[in-house]
Image (cartoon, rainbow, N blue to C red; front, top):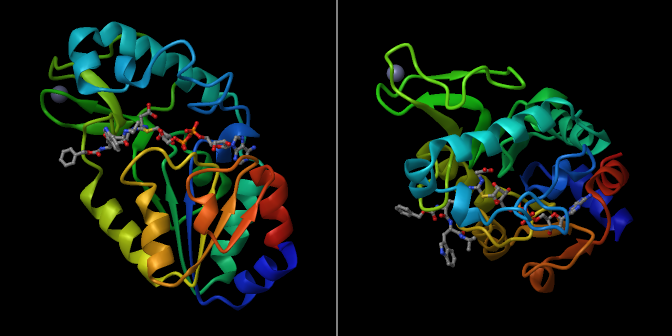
Length: 237
Ligand code: BV8
Ligand code: ZN
């Protein structure tokens, strides 16, 4: 299937890509639901929710600060760079990511929509001001705004709506894509996972890149069972 997918990508005028935590696994960022996953010590509902932040902002911030420190030591891998190449040679391209680690942007991807925000953005819960802060470990936990308000991570928590413009652009790209790559996602979290269905219903060729099977595997045009770095380098060459 590698050869077919290679030629599909070469001739496609419009390509969209959806990435999940598995895209960052080879960079050393733990996934959410794997055996050494981020959720192992905690449950998503314990930490990645507004209620958890309300209840114990210090605990939630300790988890995010630890993740920021971990991600700061990670580098984009060959798969991230392959997606930059694909963007440069494709007429209409959009990279849609569920990842908050910023590795796609660090690799040089430009046409990116972050459905779940960024771990590097801090937003004030009082005045709404938001800014990017790349310091690996924050001096104060929880951090505060100049206005005195408490800052929160600029990510989308469970129960929170996705950024409207990013979600709208993602749906449009999924509808228009001739080829829709789904890389490193367990396709559990909604509404991100539904993009593959939208693409498939709009008769785009959906290609899954994942060492494991997922709920999408049964209806994709090609299921490439391997790690993102290796497979993306092969199909984008
Ligand atoms: C919303 C940011 C509502 C924070 C994240 C019941 C049924 C269906 C849906 C729901 C439900 N109950 C609640 C919901 C909705 C909920 C949801 O989907 N829950 C799930 C758990 C069932 N969704 C929401 O709440 C969303 N909001 O729906 O709004 C609404 C509507 C209107 C008005 C008001 C409200 C918001 C969801 C966003 C949550 N935030 N992240 C943070 O990061 O701290 S989600 C989090 O999970 C990350 O973003 C992550 O990317 C995402 C999805 O996980 P994956 O990326 O797929 O990662 P995972 O570990 O699961 O899988 C890794 C995959 O990689 C595996 O398949 C593995 O095989 C593969 N892999 C491993 N190694 C590699 C690899 N692949 C390639 N190469 C490798 N080397
Ligand atoms: Zn403020």
